[in-house]
Figure 1: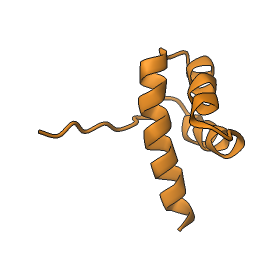
Figure 2: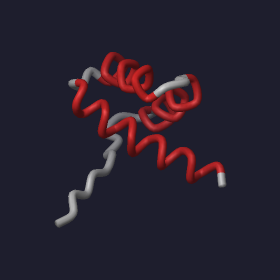
Figure 3: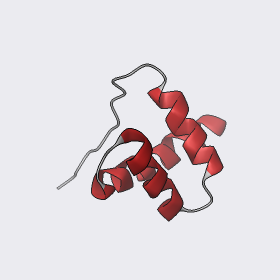
Figure 4: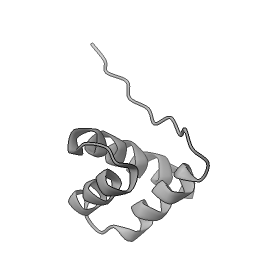
Length: 62
């Protein structure tokens, strides 16, 4: 079994805003909290977004 999650950006500038949060935040907990507040999502969804965002933006640096 496999669960596949992805982030779909629906508003202009969301990807840039998320990338900035990834750069600013020292911990995953801090990132989750800021994602929840910034994008008005619940903490479970913020956790999924944080995990995917860390992978997405860290892979772009390489």
